[in-house]
Length: 89
Image (cartoon, rainbow, N blue to C red; front, side):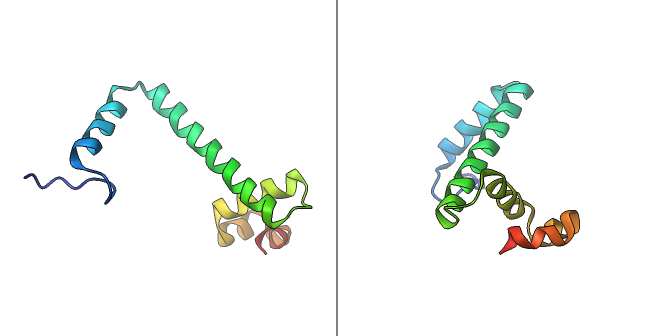
């Protein structure tokens, strides 16, 4: 038994190593596209959840609220000042 610790508690060492071997086989451009796709998916899921909470909100408001979630309250306030308060409720 090795000292290897998988990245997730529900993943075996063999599967974890297989995933990382797959990442190593990718070109930098492929890894970047994978990360960008994951980021887009997270944004879409966040907006879908916000759409349930704020059904009458315009798309732009939902994007701003999603951005505020991503940045966190402190950085959102620093970046957008008083305007940020509307997106942080």
